[in-house]
Length: 267
Length: 305
Image 1 (tube, chains in turn orange, brown):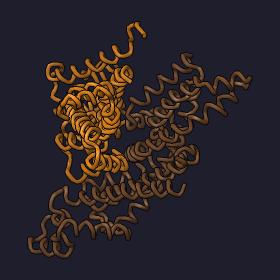
Image 2 (spheres, chains in turn red, purple):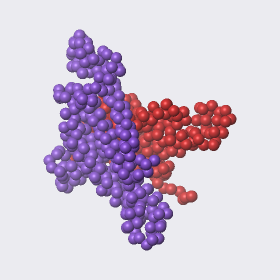
Image 3 (cartoon, helix red, strand yellow):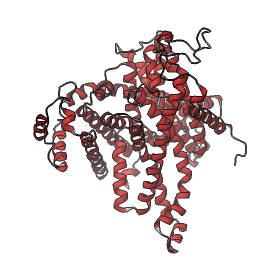
Image 4 (cartoon, rainbow over the protein chains, first blue to last red):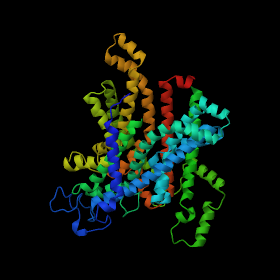
């Protein structure tokens, strides 16, 4: 319909690629150790605002370089979000396909589990599990994917239910195709469009969740940098060193905007 | 109607049973509960005695049954940190958290509804473009960061509002904005999409052809049919609102439920966390039940079929 090249997803993709490569090549981009403290250089403003400062994005309360913590923090936050999104997608899509195609008790059981999980607000469920298990990168990935698979499950299940009754699936069944073959070859390709749309949406949510947890002190254990942790670090210095919180938050908002711009293209 | 109510009630109960299973599982997720509940230097024989006294040496189904029996009577055990019964502790903090969530909902509706309606009525005008930009921004900016920026602008630079703490009603203004920003964007988005769809329908064209004024067409014919998706989206935002309240408590140093639980985490205060999860989930289930009934009033098709 609309043959015009759309600018929005391109801008979105550029933003995401820029931030992801910043995280990937962090060691090459900065010579400063994100953990190295320099108490003589506490709360230095960004170099643009103060000619005497040699910190691009300023320094924090312990004299650590904000730009280097930002880059290395992106590695932790993005890795966790990527892994959690991947697991949530795999688990949600395969359980949705199975529940929708097999139906019966298996479907009823999984649907009830999804109901229960949706009754507990994400953040509360995540806080509860992290509170008991303790926070580590692996635990964060497990918890975040555990709380996100439901959305995939519901959408894929609903679409599979309709597809199961469609003529081409019936034809395949009449030809004697095995259930796994029907699911993989005939149903899966037809739900992929919705799955891709959901992935961009969920990935954004998962990143925001991961940083929320970091902000509450439940994320990647300190002193390892994470975006949420960086924003929390600066909260007490808002009045005299705004850059510690504001710059990582702006990076996060930029990334989320980029993902939304891409996602809008699929919805 | 009665059958519909009973069916929704049964569903709510089923969900709460599931929640109780998860909450029960929290006792064991962290390893040996007898060790977790006692100080680290407790002698082995005392741990064993406690294990027996607390019933941790019984079979899991039996323990679960006893757990449910306790929960039904409102007994969630004693907080490890405060050495007091947990439920009263949690309930005492609940009103502030609810006030935050509700004021966030008020902000979301006050901002989201006019934004969504106006952007649907006048698509592709500067108003619509502004509204869509605001929606995108609100969905991308994390609420805890928004809170910090709000503090920086209104609390520190302009000094119009208190940057943190709880003095008077004005202290709730910035937290309410923090909580309401994301739901406002989602409400506006859904409203815009639905209203644009409804405005293209035949009955709206008929109403226009009848010579009804624009405002009347929108008010009497279009908005009515958007109420249902609006209720759905509000129901789906409950968790977001509660989560937002927890974040706002952390940023603005407000003594609510979220802060109580986040502080409980460092002490591994499992009974407190359990009560927190159960009370919040119960609340969500109750509000969803209420919304189901509102639904049935708005759309008779639901309970008549």
